[in-house]
Structures are given as C-alpha cells and as structure tokens.
Length: 177
Image (cartoon, rainbow, N blue to C red; front, side, top):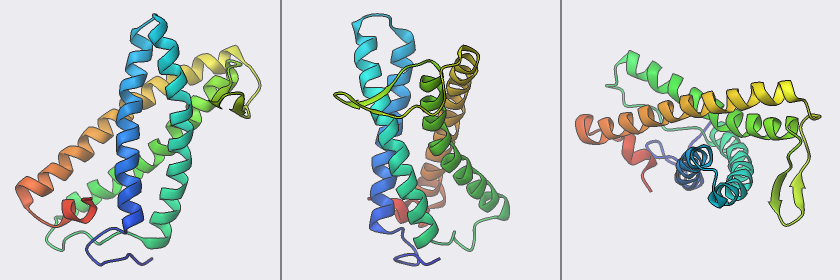
C-alpha cells in the first residue's frame, strides 16, 4: 500500500470522504424526516433516500478500493497505542456501516416488494424475494444500524476535532480538503 503523500490522503480519497460525509449526513437527516412525517413530504424524502443510498453504496465501493490500493498516511508516532487502536476500530466500523447500511436498506425494500427506483422507471434489481418476516427484521436492523452509524460518525467527528484543536497534529490536515 502506498499513499500519494506520506502525510496526506490522495485527492481522490479526500474527495470521496467529504462527498460521502455530506451524503451520509443528508441520509441520516432524511431518514429521521421519513419516519417523523406522514405528509406528502414523506414521499419526497423516500424518492431522495433510495437513490442517494444506492449512490453512496457505489461510492463506498470506490472508496474501499482506493483505500486498499493507495493506503492511508501513518498515524503520528506520538499517538498513544490505545488511540491508534481506537482509530483503527472506528475506521473499520465506519467502512462496515457505509457498506452494510445501504445493503440492508436495499434488502429491506426487496423483502417488502418495493423497488429501489433510481430515475424514472430504472430500478435496482431486488436482492431477495418478498418476505414479510424478513422485511420486519431488516427494517429494524436498518433503524438500529442508523443509530450505530450516527454514533460512530459523531465519535469520528469528535476525534477529528480533538486532533485539530487539542493535539494540533497532522491527523485532521491529512484529510482536510
């Protein structure tokens, strides 16, 4: 694994990070709005949520390959071992949730017999046959994964701000746009 610079993520990695961060925050808020309303706004939010989730899944695949091929800058040498371990674990959790959350949503919709409509009549193929029990399980899983995702994202943001404001090391700068 090599990175573009020993202390900075590649331009592609930074673009994917910030683009997906905006998309993930949008998805979390759209998801909250979807379950909080039964008005016509609900249908609009659903129409945004489904294709945005599919787009984020595609970007996640590109991001995963980019990370595996180009690597990441090493953490600062002065970083305590427990913080290195926490950073590694949180990145694994973020990557897992970035892939798992949209896949579970897609499977949930498939189990419910709902298409993941991308644009017009174009829809993604179902991942499974309609199954009301699977739909109920996957809907609950999608909700709980969203809570977990939000928690890990908030920890990630807190850690980034800690590096920027408290430690004043190069960690935040390595991903800054």
